[in-house]
Image (cartoon, rainbow, N blue to C red; front, side, top):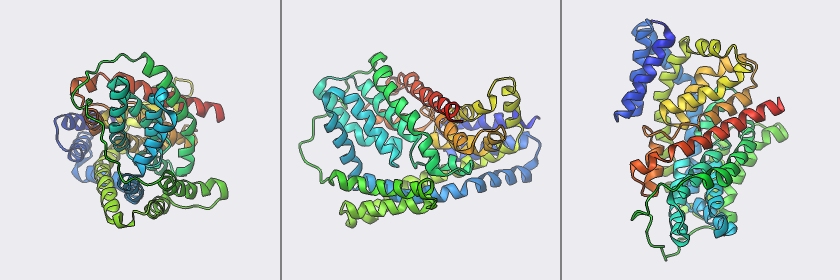
Length: 418
């Protein structure tokens, strides 16, 4: 059987198994084995390609584990909540959708997982929705849209691994996402949300009473200190030519944040939480790497290249298309960016696309369909606002539109500056 078709069958099998609730890691590994065997490679060669795929992403996995320090600090010290509340208070009730979207964008851009960012902000959104009688459907869309915008300019696993696979500086890939993220934020808040109908019901979860007790939250400047240190360290490469690897910059920012917020007694809790969150991603990436190894060894990239050969700038479109397709297959930004960048980075750069923009456009493309129901993001974000599955499904077209805007903006920026 043609290796490209075999890889597609293996990928399709993985999707079916994930939908059937088999653990994603085993689903991806089984799909990889089946794809390799159908390609006629035999068991030994198939396993060799799978291991090669895991080896390719091992450096990124190490950096992702190191990022757990910053993630744990932001969530467990209360810094993330302080930042979100400060933004919402500053913008006021008149601009509540902008405030929620901007909060999610900034938290995600600082390194908080998008689903964690939404869950962190959701209680505040519920309070504001009750007070102003706002649509919970639009409130959730604002948070998801803002989180997607932040995800393309953050030191999160998807950006780290895309940069790693394209051999591009993480800081440069993050910077390439700034303008598309701002465009996406404005269009989400001022175009998509106003045109979105309210499909949701005001359920019991949304009607929670506002909590009266004050949380022991750090001051805003203390909350921002750690993330700013991380960004400064990463920015030293383009600014001063001094290379500080993300494996160093991310945990240093986390430790500085713990000290700045005076939460040193909670250091162990921060580290445990961050490691727990990153470990689940790292394990997922092992399974993702096995399938990426099969796809990379197959002729699927050649098929995609030939399909785009007759298109003007077809090589450029390969990056966002690969990111979008793989995010749809895995319902995950991280897994989508991993498979797409590991499998197609070589072909994309060979088509003349700069490594930084190849990584940036792949990363943006991976936000297009990462919210499908066979992934955890769909359920985590819906649960944060008490949505039923049927209500949450109705949000998919609108969050897909946000991802498309980010992808098109990233492509547009590439054409403007190349």
